[in-house]
Image 1 (cartoon, rainbow, N blue to C red):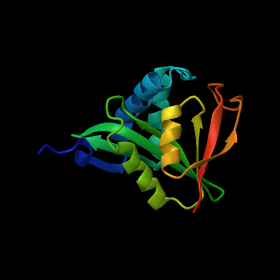
Image 2 (image 1 turned 180 degrees about the vertical axis):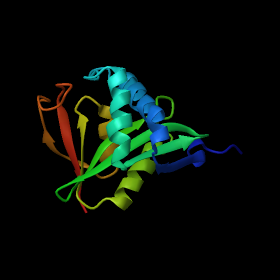
Image 3 (image 1 turned 90 degrees about the horizontal axis):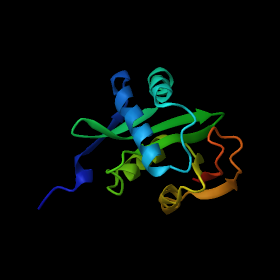
Image 4 (image 1 turned 30 degrees about the vertical axis):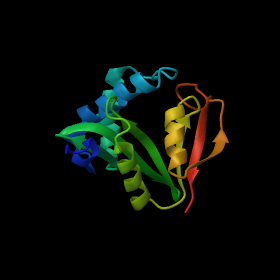
Length: 158
């Protein structure tokens, strides 16, 4: 009997040394899964943002397989509102329970309600969040996001 891929996944807080791996997850996932919403920033700016801003927040978790970052999640809190700001899985590692593992971590560490945005056209992510109890509470035309793509605000209640 072979070990299922998700069994070898470890999750931990990201460190400064993880910045290249986290940036790779964000960049490659967006290229593969969000072709309708190209990044508003060139790849070198994304790498710099991850290293200089995202990782230093101390709220980024990575999922690893064999020492390689295969998923990343960034959390935040703003005026007692809890957010999942980023949740990306590296292409080729989706549908293995890795995103679910990160989402469960968010559910155990954040208060309620938890909110997140995803693009309306990102049907895979929408199904994923809805399967985990999130409900759409607002649809926008996308004019307030950098990509100018229609998005949807999801919320998970208590």
